[in-house]
Amino acid sequence: MMRQDDNGNRFPVAGGLGRSAAEEMAAEFEARGHKQLYWVEAEVRIVVGGALVRDGRVLAARRSTPAEVAGFWEFPGGKAEPGESVEQALERELAEELGVRARALRQLPGSWVVRPGLELRIWAAELLEGEPRALLEHSEVRWLGPAELESVEWLAHDREVLPHVAELLRAR
Ligand SMILES: Nc1nc2c([nH]c(=O)n2[C@H]2C[C@H](O)[C@@H](COP(=O)(O)OP(=O)(O)OP(=O)(O)O)O2)c(=O)[nH]1
Image (cartoon, rainbow, N blue to C red; front, side, top):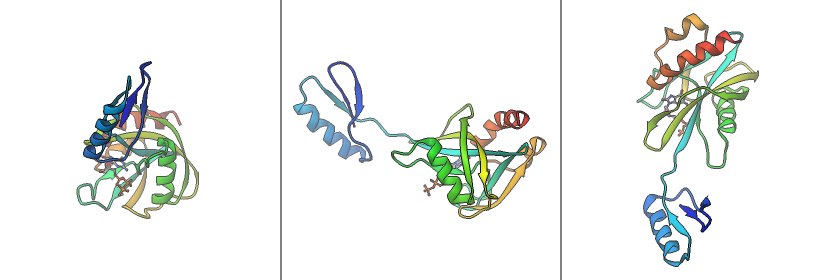
């Protein structure tokens, strides 16, 4: 739920509520707010995938779960938790899913709606420590050179970022 004060500044007041609970709360606050405005906005969660680069190659990971995405290749990562930055989320997810320490570098151009309320972004990342292994939701990981980027069956959104990944590999 959001609030705007009489100077036009907007603030998030509460989050993580269902829509009806949020609307109820906004109506209550609105009823007793003098010059303040209260309203509800849908929260968008970010899912971040990491284009992990090493020696001119990028890591692709094959999903084993859930069924809708199983068998397809992606950039490993996951959803940012409330209060977590996208960089922190990526570094945590890469540690959990691959057992490595990595650093988020910069967001590659583009963002995609996976489903309503869930937005995908892809970040370049560098490996600091460890050898990536498929520990959780993947069945296989593979390092791909620039000529191999099209050799696996990517999830649809990920395919769109491949030109930027190719550029990233050329730069390294
Ligand atoms: N991690 C990741 N997810 C992607 C990519 N491309 C893409 O369409 N997706 C989709 C697949 C899933 O529907 C969704 C991300 O969910 P996820 O299962 O990775 O998130 P998570 O690890 O936080 O999982 P959970 O806690 O919700 O179970 O985004 C990608 O490159 N990386």
